[in-house]
Length: 438
Ligand code: HAM
Image (cartoon, rainbow, N blue to C red; front, side, top):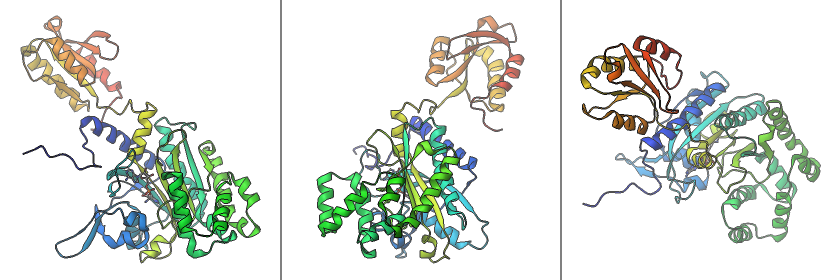
Protein backbone atom coordinates (compact mmCIF):
# COMPACT_ATOMS: atom_id res chain seq x y z
CA UNK A 1 0.00 0.00 0.00
CA UNK A 2 1.20 3.50 -0.77
CA UNK A 3 1.95 5.79 2.15
CA UNK A 4 -1.14 7.75 3.14
CA UNK A 5 -0.57 11.51 3.07
CA UNK A 6 -2.02 14.12 5.40
CA UNK A 7 -5.05 15.99 4.10
CA UNK A 8 -4.33 19.17 2.13
CA UNK A 9 -4.66 22.27 4.29
CA UNK A 10 -3.87 20.41 7.54
CA UNK A 11 -0.58 20.30 9.42
CA UNK A 12 1.37 17.65 11.27
CA UNK A 13 2.98 18.98 14.40
CA UNK A 14 6.31 17.24 14.82
CA UNK A 15 8.10 18.23 18.06
CA UNK A 16 9.75 21.22 16.37
CA UNK A 17 6.42 22.62 15.15
CA UNK A 18 4.76 21.67 18.41
CA UNK A 19 7.33 23.76 20.30
CA UNK A 20 6.32 26.81 18.24
CA UNK A 21 2.62 26.08 18.76
CA UNK A 22 3.03 25.68 22.52
CA UNK A 23 5.05 28.87 22.68
CA UNK A 24 2.31 30.78 20.84
CA UNK A 25 -0.37 29.31 23.09
CA UNK A 26 1.62 30.13 26.25
CA UNK A 27 1.87 33.75 25.11
CA UNK A 28 -1.84 33.93 24.27
CA UNK A 29 -2.75 32.47 27.61
CA UNK A 30 -0.42 34.76 29.55
CA UNK A 31 -1.75 37.86 27.73
CA UNK A 32 -5.34 36.79 28.40
CA UNK A 33 -4.75 36.29 32.10
CA UNK A 34 -2.78 39.54 32.36
CA UNK A 35 -5.74 41.40 30.89
CA UNK A 36 -8.31 39.80 33.17
CA UNK A 37 -9.81 37.09 30.93
CA UNK A 38 -10.70 33.59 32.13
CA UNK A 39 -10.61 30.49 29.97
CA UNK A 40 -13.52 28.49 28.53
CA UNK A 41 -13.87 25.89 25.82
CA UNK A 42 -16.65 24.66 23.57
CA UNK A 43 -17.32 21.42 21.66
CA UNK A 44 -15.47 20.74 18.41
CA UNK A 45 -18.80 20.30 16.61
CA UNK A 46 -22.16 21.98 17.02
CA UNK A 47 -25.55 21.93 15.33
CA UNK A 48 -25.12 23.24 11.80
CA UNK A 49 -27.79 25.84 12.41
CA UNK A 50 -25.62 27.63 14.97
CA UNK A 51 -23.36 28.74 12.10
CA UNK A 52 -25.89 29.16 9.32
CA UNK A 53 -28.12 31.35 11.51
CA UNK A 54 -26.11 34.55 11.94
CA UNK A 55 -22.52 34.28 10.73
CA UNK A 56 -23.27 35.00 7.07
CA UNK A 57 -22.83 33.30 3.70
CA UNK A 58 -19.05 33.36 3.58
CA UNK A 59 -18.51 31.22 6.65
CA UNK A 60 -21.58 29.06 5.92
CA UNK A 61 -19.99 28.21 2.57
CA UNK A 62 -16.80 27.06 4.31
CA UNK A 63 -18.33 24.60 6.75
CA UNK A 64 -17.25 21.02 7.18
CA UNK A 65 -20.69 19.61 7.87
CA UNK A 66 -21.92 16.11 8.55
CA UNK A 67 -25.08 14.23 9.35
CA UNK A 68 -24.83 11.96 12.37
CA UNK A 69 -26.42 8.54 12.61
CA UNK A 70 -29.53 10.04 14.12
CA UNK A 71 -29.94 12.32 11.09
CA UNK A 72 -28.83 15.44 12.96
CA UNK A 73 -27.03 18.06 10.89
CA UNK A 74 -23.75 19.05 12.52
CA UNK A 75 -20.70 21.09 11.60
CA UNK A 76 -17.12 21.26 12.85
CA UNK A 77 -16.59 24.67 14.40
CA UNK A 78 -15.23 27.24 11.93
CA UNK A 79 -15.13 29.91 14.68
CA UNK A 80 -15.99 30.06 18.38
CA UNK A 81 -18.11 33.20 18.62
CA UNK A 82 -21.46 31.41 18.03
CA UNK A 83 -20.54 28.77 20.65
CA UNK A 84 -19.59 31.50 23.11
CA UNK A 85 -22.92 33.24 22.47
CA UNK A 86 -24.78 29.94 22.95
CA UNK A 87 -22.92 29.19 26.19
CA UNK A 88 -23.42 32.69 27.60
CA UNK A 89 -27.10 32.59 26.64
CA UNK A 90 -27.51 29.38 28.61
CA UNK A 91 -26.29 30.97 31.86
CA UNK A 92 -27.04 34.58 31.19
CA UNK A 93 -28.67 35.22 34.55
CA UNK A 94 -26.00 33.65 36.70
CA UNK A 95 -22.82 34.87 35.01
CA UNK A 96 -21.24 37.87 36.73
CA UNK A 97 -20.73 40.75 34.28
CA UNK A 98 -18.63 41.71 32.56
CA UNK A 99 -18.03 38.27 31.15
CA UNK A 100 -14.40 38.31 30.01
CA UNK A 101 -13.61 34.93 28.44
CA UNK A 102 -10.83 33.57 26.29
CA UNK A 103 -10.24 30.32 24.47
CA UNK A 104 -7.64 28.75 22.20
CA UNK A 105 -9.47 26.53 19.75
CA UNK A 106 -8.77 24.24 16.83
CA UNK A 107 -11.03 25.32 13.97
CA UNK A 108 -11.80 24.01 10.47
CA UNK A 109 -12.84 25.95 7.39
CA UNK A 110 -13.15 24.40 3.94
CA UNK A 111 -11.10 27.19 2.37
CA UNK A 112 -8.74 26.89 -0.55
CA UNK A 113 -5.37 26.40 1.17
CA UNK A 114 -2.95 29.24 0.44
CA UNK A 115 -0.34 31.34 2.26
CA UNK A 116 -1.81 32.16 5.64
CA UNK A 117 -5.00 30.20 4.99
CA UNK A 118 -5.44 26.56 5.94
CA UNK A 119 -8.36 24.22 6.40
CA UNK A 120 -7.43 23.49 9.99
CA UNK A 121 -5.91 26.15 12.22
CA UNK A 122 -5.90 27.50 15.75
CA UNK A 123 -7.45 30.72 16.90
CA UNK A 124 -7.16 32.68 20.12
CA UNK A 125 -10.44 34.37 21.00
CA UNK A 126 -11.10 36.92 23.70
CA UNK A 127 -14.61 38.27 24.17
CA UNK A 128 -16.29 40.66 26.56
CA UNK A 129 -20.00 40.71 27.35
CA UNK A 130 -20.62 43.95 29.16
CA UNK A 131 -23.64 46.17 29.19
CA UNK A 132 -22.01 49.46 29.99
CA UNK A 133 -19.22 51.74 28.75
CA UNK A 134 -18.91 50.07 25.37
CA UNK A 135 -15.81 51.93 24.35
CA UNK A 136 -13.86 50.72 27.39
CA UNK A 137 -14.67 47.12 26.47
CA UNK A 138 -13.75 47.79 22.82
CA UNK A 139 -10.47 49.36 23.91
CA UNK A 140 -9.71 46.54 26.36
CA UNK A 141 -10.07 43.99 23.55
CA UNK A 142 -7.80 45.89 21.20
CA UNK A 143 -5.34 46.51 24.02
CA UNK A 144 -5.20 42.78 24.83
CA UNK A 145 -4.38 41.88 21.21
CA UNK A 146 -1.68 44.56 21.02
CA UNK A 147 -0.36 43.60 24.45
CA UNK A 148 0.24 40.07 23.20
CA UNK A 149 1.84 41.16 19.93
CA UNK A 150 4.11 43.56 21.82
CA UNK A 151 5.06 40.84 24.29
CA UNK A 152 6.47 38.68 21.48
CA UNK A 153 8.59 41.52 20.18
CA UNK A 154 6.47 43.22 17.49
CA UNK A 155 6.78 46.99 17.57
CA UNK A 156 4.65 49.81 16.21
CA UNK A 157 6.58 49.78 12.92
CA UNK A 158 5.67 46.12 12.44
CA UNK A 159 1.92 46.03 12.96
CA UNK A 160 -1.12 48.23 12.61
CA UNK A 161 -4.59 47.90 14.10
CA UNK A 162 -7.04 49.24 11.51
CA UNK A 163 -10.25 50.35 13.16
CA UNK A 164 -13.62 51.43 11.85
CA UNK A 165 -17.29 51.10 12.74
CA UNK A 166 -20.07 49.36 10.87
CA UNK A 167 -22.69 51.51 12.61
CA UNK A 168 -20.91 54.65 11.37
CA UNK A 169 -20.41 53.21 7.88
CA UNK A 170 -24.10 52.32 7.67
CA UNK A 171 -25.05 55.93 8.42
CA UNK A 172 -22.47 57.22 5.97
CA UNK A 173 -23.61 54.89 3.18
CA UNK A 174 -27.22 55.88 3.77
CA UNK A 175 -26.24 59.54 3.61
CA UNK A 176 -24.77 58.78 0.17
CA UNK A 177 -27.97 57.20 -1.15
CA UNK A 178 -27.60 53.53 -0.26
CA UNK A 179 -30.63 51.82 1.27
CA UNK A 180 -30.68 49.37 4.19
CA UNK A 181 -31.05 46.33 1.92
CA UNK A 182 -27.82 47.19 0.09
CA UNK A 183 -25.62 47.50 3.19
CA UNK A 184 -24.81 43.78 3.50
CA UNK A 185 -23.73 43.70 -0.16
CA UNK A 186 -21.46 46.71 0.30
CA UNK A 187 -19.90 45.24 3.46
CA UNK A 188 -19.03 41.98 1.78
CA UNK A 189 -17.74 43.82 -1.30
CA UNK A 190 -15.44 46.02 0.78
CA UNK A 191 -14.25 43.06 2.82
CA UNK A 192 -13.31 41.15 -0.35
CA UNK A 193 -11.57 44.07 -2.06
CA UNK A 194 -8.05 43.57 -0.64
CA UNK A 195 -8.28 39.81 -1.16
CA UNK A 196 -9.06 39.77 -4.91
CA UNK A 197 -7.44 41.28 -8.04
CA UNK A 198 -8.65 44.84 -8.93
CA UNK A 199 -10.33 43.81 -12.22
CA UNK A 200 -12.28 41.07 -10.46
CA UNK A 201 -13.32 43.59 -7.82
CA UNK A 202 -14.50 46.08 -10.46
CA UNK A 203 -16.56 43.39 -12.17
CA UNK A 204 -18.06 42.33 -8.86
CA UNK A 205 -18.86 45.93 -7.89
CA UNK A 206 -20.54 46.58 -11.28
CA UNK A 207 -22.64 43.49 -10.87
CA UNK A 208 -23.66 44.13 -7.28
CA UNK A 209 -24.08 47.92 -7.47
CA UNK A 210 -25.35 48.51 -11.03
CA UNK A 211 -25.86 52.26 -10.42
CA UNK A 212 -22.61 53.94 -11.60
CA UNK A 213 -23.29 57.07 -9.55
CA UNK A 214 -23.60 55.05 -6.34
CA UNK A 215 -20.39 53.18 -7.16
CA UNK A 216 -18.63 56.50 -7.66
CA UNK A 217 -19.86 57.74 -4.27
CA UNK A 218 -18.67 54.54 -2.63
CA UNK A 219 -15.20 55.08 -4.08
CA UNK A 220 -15.09 58.66 -2.85
CA UNK A 221 -16.13 57.54 0.60
CA UNK A 222 -13.41 54.86 0.58
CA UNK A 223 -10.73 57.51 0.21
CA UNK A 224 -11.51 59.09 3.59
CA UNK A 225 -8.24 58.49 5.43
CA UNK A 226 -8.59 59.73 9.00
CA UNK A 227 -11.15 60.58 11.66
CA UNK A 228 -10.50 64.28 10.92
CA UNK A 229 -11.27 63.76 7.22
CA UNK A 230 -14.30 61.71 8.16
CA UNK A 231 -15.71 64.50 10.33
CA UNK A 232 -15.21 66.89 7.41
CA UNK A 233 -16.66 64.54 4.82
CA UNK A 234 -19.69 63.30 6.77
CA UNK A 235 -22.96 65.26 6.73
CA UNK A 236 -24.60 66.34 10.00
CA UNK A 237 -26.77 63.17 10.18
CA UNK A 238 -23.64 60.98 10.44
CA UNK A 239 -21.66 63.02 13.00
CA UNK A 240 -23.25 61.32 16.02
CA UNK A 241 -22.11 57.89 14.86
CA UNK A 242 -18.49 59.08 14.64
CA UNK A 243 -18.41 60.01 18.31
CA UNK A 244 -17.92 56.46 19.71
CA UNK A 245 -14.93 56.03 17.39
CA UNK A 246 -13.41 59.29 18.61
CA UNK A 247 -13.94 58.16 22.20
CA UNK A 248 -12.33 54.81 21.44
CA UNK A 249 -9.23 56.44 19.92
CA UNK A 250 -9.04 58.74 22.94
CA UNK A 251 -9.08 55.73 25.33
CA UNK A 252 -6.51 53.82 23.25
CA UNK A 253 -4.30 56.90 23.51
CA UNK A 254 -4.65 56.98 27.30
CA UNK A 255 -3.80 53.26 27.39
CA UNK A 256 -0.59 54.05 25.52
CA UNK A 257 -1.15 52.21 22.25
CA UNK A 258 -2.20 54.92 19.77
CA UNK A 259 1.01 54.36 17.82
CA UNK A 260 -0.30 50.93 16.92
CA UNK A 261 -3.78 52.06 15.87
CA UNK A 262 -5.32 53.91 12.95
CA UNK A 263 -8.71 54.60 11.42
CA UNK A 264 -9.45 52.71 8.18
CA UNK A 265 -12.84 53.12 6.61
CA UNK A 266 -12.35 50.02 4.46
CA UNK A 267 -12.40 47.64 7.42
CA UNK A 268 -15.86 46.08 7.63
CA UNK A 269 -15.12 42.37 8.42
CA UNK A 270 -16.49 39.37 6.58
CA UNK A 271 -18.80 37.98 9.24
CA UNK A 272 -22.39 39.15 9.18
CA UNK A 273 -23.00 39.62 12.90
CA UNK A 274 -20.85 42.71 13.55
CA UNK A 275 -22.83 45.78 14.51
CA UNK A 276 -20.43 48.50 15.66
CA UNK A 277 -16.68 48.95 16.04
CA UNK A 278 -14.69 46.56 13.83
CA UNK A 279 -10.93 46.06 13.60
CA UNK A 280 -8.24 44.01 11.93
CA UNK A 281 -4.53 43.80 12.65
CA UNK A 282 -2.04 43.66 9.79
CA UNK A 283 1.67 43.48 9.24
CA UNK A 284 2.52 47.02 8.12
CA UNK A 285 4.77 45.94 5.25
CA UNK A 286 3.88 42.54 3.93
CA UNK A 287 1.03 41.33 1.80
CA UNK A 288 -0.19 38.96 4.48
CA UNK A 289 -3.86 38.65 5.33
CA UNK A 290 -5.06 39.89 8.69
CA UNK A 291 -3.43 38.32 11.70
CA UNK A 292 -6.39 39.20 13.89
CA UNK A 293 -9.95 40.42 13.42
CA UNK A 294 -12.82 41.33 15.64
CA UNK A 295 -15.46 43.79 16.61
CA UNK A 296 -18.71 44.50 18.37
CA UNK A 297 -21.64 42.13 17.86
CA UNK A 298 -24.49 43.47 19.95
CA UNK A 299 -27.26 41.40 18.35
CA UNK A 300 -25.75 37.93 18.16
CA UNK A 301 -26.87 36.67 21.57
CA UNK A 302 -30.42 37.84 20.90
CA UNK A 303 -30.23 36.42 17.37
CA UNK A 304 -29.43 33.03 18.88
CA UNK A 305 -32.43 33.07 21.18
CA UNK A 306 -30.98 34.92 24.18
CA UNK A 307 -31.56 38.38 25.59
CA UNK A 308 -30.21 41.48 23.94
CA UNK A 309 -26.72 41.76 25.42
CA UNK A 310 -23.88 43.74 23.88
CA UNK A 311 -20.61 41.97 23.15
CA UNK A 312 -17.21 42.56 21.61
CA UNK A 313 -14.26 40.30 20.85
CA UNK A 314 -11.59 39.14 18.44
CA UNK A 315 -9.97 36.07 16.96
CA UNK A 316 -6.24 35.81 16.23
CA UNK A 317 -5.09 32.91 14.06
CA UNK A 318 -1.84 31.02 14.51
CA UNK A 319 -1.02 30.65 10.79
CA UNK A 320 -0.50 34.27 9.74
CA UNK A 321 0.97 35.07 13.14
CA UNK A 322 3.64 32.41 12.74
CA UNK A 323 4.55 33.61 9.23
CA UNK A 324 4.84 37.15 10.54
CA UNK A 325 6.99 36.20 13.54
CA UNK A 326 9.22 34.05 11.35
CA UNK A 327 9.70 36.93 8.90
CA UNK A 328 10.77 39.16 11.79
CA UNK A 329 13.06 36.52 13.33
CA UNK A 330 11.02 36.49 16.51
CA UNK A 331 10.64 32.74 16.89
CA UNK A 332 14.04 32.06 18.42
CA UNK A 333 12.72 31.23 21.85
CA UNK A 334 10.05 28.92 20.40
CA UNK A 335 12.25 25.85 20.55
CA UNK A 336 12.43 22.68 22.56
CA UNK A 337 15.14 22.87 25.22
CA UNK A 338 16.61 20.49 27.65
CA UNK A 339 17.98 21.87 30.91
CA UNK A 340 20.58 19.22 31.71
CA UNK A 341 22.16 16.33 29.88
CA UNK A 342 24.20 13.97 32.03
CA UNK A 343 27.39 12.84 30.29
CA UNK A 344 29.38 9.96 31.78
CA UNK A 345 32.64 8.24 31.14
CA UNK A 346 32.01 5.00 32.94
CA UNK A 347 28.56 3.65 33.52
CA UNK A 348 29.59 2.16 36.83
CA UNK A 349 30.08 5.68 38.24
CA UNK A 350 27.00 6.82 36.40
CA UNK A 351 24.62 4.32 37.91
CA UNK A 352 25.28 5.63 41.40
CA UNK A 353 25.98 9.30 41.00
CA UNK A 354 24.42 9.90 37.63
CA UNK A 355 21.02 8.33 38.09
CA UNK A 356 20.72 9.91 41.50
CA UNK A 357 21.48 13.29 39.88
CA UNK A 358 18.87 12.61 37.19
CA UNK A 359 16.34 12.03 39.94
CA UNK A 360 17.33 15.13 41.95
CA UNK A 361 17.23 17.43 38.94
CA UNK A 362 13.92 16.09 37.66
CA UNK A 363 12.47 16.38 41.17
CA UNK A 364 13.43 20.04 41.11
CA UNK A 365 11.50 20.42 37.86
CA UNK A 366 14.40 20.56 35.41
CA UNK A 367 14.21 18.61 32.19
CA UNK A 368 17.05 16.14 32.32
CA UNK A 369 18.16 13.37 29.97
CA UNK A 370 21.02 10.92 29.47
CA UNK A 371 22.28 8.44 26.92
CA UNK A 372 20.85 4.92 27.32
CA UNK A 373 23.80 3.21 25.64
CA UNK A 374 26.33 2.34 28.28
CA UNK A 375 29.35 2.58 26.07
CA UNK A 376 29.08 5.82 24.09
CA UNK A 377 32.15 8.00 24.05
CA UNK A 378 31.80 11.25 26.00
CA UNK A 379 32.23 13.26 22.77
CA UNK A 380 29.25 11.49 21.29
CA UNK A 381 27.17 12.13 24.42
CA UNK A 382 28.09 15.81 24.26
CA UNK A 383 26.93 15.88 20.65
CA UNK A 384 23.67 14.35 21.75
CA UNK A 385 23.37 17.02 24.46
CA UNK A 386 23.77 19.76 21.89
CA UNK A 387 21.37 18.16 19.41
CA UNK A 388 18.78 18.17 22.19
CA UNK A 389 19.56 21.84 22.85
CA UNK A 390 20.71 21.16 26.42
CA UNK A 391 21.67 24.26 28.36
CA UNK A 392 24.19 22.40 30.51
CA UNK A 393 26.08 19.13 30.35
CA UNK A 394 26.70 17.58 33.73
CA UNK A 395 29.89 15.58 33.17
CA UNK A 396 30.93 12.62 35.26
CA UNK A 397 34.42 11.98 33.94
CA UNK A 398 37.43 10.11 35.25
CA UNK A 399 38.61 13.32 36.97
CA UNK A 400 35.61 13.22 39.28
CA UNK A 401 35.72 9.52 39.98
CA UNK A 402 37.07 9.77 43.51
CA UNK A 403 35.33 12.97 44.47
CA UNK A 404 31.84 14.22 45.06
CA UNK A 405 32.19 16.61 42.17
CA UNK A 406 30.91 17.01 38.66
CA UNK A 407 32.08 19.13 35.73
CA UNK A 408 29.34 21.54 34.67
CA UNK A 409 29.59 22.64 31.06
CA UNK A 410 27.62 25.59 29.76
CA UNK A 411 26.65 24.44 26.27
CA UNK A 412 26.05 27.97 24.98
CA UNK A 413 29.53 29.39 25.60
CA UNK A 414 31.54 26.21 26.24
CA UNK A 415 32.75 27.37 29.68
CA UNK A 416 33.04 24.73 32.36
CA UNK A 417 33.72 24.40 36.07
CA UNK A 418 34.20 21.70 38.67
CA UNK A 419 31.67 21.83 41.48
CA UNK A 420 30.62 19.60 44.36
CA UNK A 421 27.30 17.85 43.68
CA UNK A 422 25.62 19.30 46.75
CA UNK A 423 26.75 22.85 45.84
CA UNK A 424 25.57 22.33 42.28
CA UNK A 425 22.13 21.22 43.44
CA UNK A 426 21.91 24.22 45.76
CA UNK A 427 23.00 26.52 42.91
CA UNK A 428 20.23 25.21 40.65
CA UNK A 429 17.68 26.74 43.04
CA UNK A 430 18.64 30.02 41.41
CA UNK A 431 18.20 28.78 37.83
CA UNK A 432 14.92 30.10 36.51
CA UNK A 433 14.87 28.58 33.03
CA UNK A 434 12.30 25.98 32.10
CA UNK A 435 11.36 25.24 35.67
CA UNK A 436 7.88 23.88 35.77
CA UNK A 437 5.77 24.08 38.91
CA UNK A 438 6.27 21.02 41.10
P1 HAM B 1 -12.17 35.86 11.35
O1 HAM B 1 -11.77 37.16 10.75
O2 HAM B 1 -12.94 34.93 10.51
O3 HAM B 1 -12.96 36.22 12.68
O4 HAM B 1 -10.87 35.14 11.86
C1 HAM B 1 -9.95 35.78 12.71
C2 HAM B 1 -8.53 35.38 12.37
O5 HAM B 1 -8.42 33.96 12.29
C3 HAM B 1 -8.06 35.84 10.98
O6 HAM B 1 -7.61 37.16 11.03
C4 HAM B 1 -6.96 34.85 10.67
O7 HAM B 1 -5.76 35.20 11.34
C5 HAM B 1 -7.48 33.58 11.31
N1 HAM B 1 -8.08 32.72 10.28
C6 HAM B 1 -9.36 32.75 9.81
N2 HAM B 1 -9.54 31.81 8.87
C7 HAM B 1 -8.35 31.16 8.73
C8 HAM B 1 -7.89 30.07 7.93
N3 HAM B 1 -8.68 29.43 7.08
N4 HAM B 1 -6.62 29.68 8.05
C9 HAM B 1 -5.79 30.30 8.94
N5 HAM B 1 -6.17 31.31 9.72
C10 HAM B 1 -7.43 31.75 9.63
C11 HAM B 1 -13.59 35.29 13.46
O8 HAM B 1 -13.40 34.09 13.37
C12 HAM B 1 -14.44 35.91 14.55
N6 HAM B 1 -15.26 34.84 15.15
C13 HAM B 1 -13.55 36.59 15.57
C14 HAM B 1 -14.32 37.20 16.70
C15 HAM B 1 -14.31 36.81 17.99
N7 HAM B 1 -15.14 38.25 16.61
C16 HAM B 1 -15.65 38.50 17.79
N8 HAM B 1 -15.17 37.62 18.65
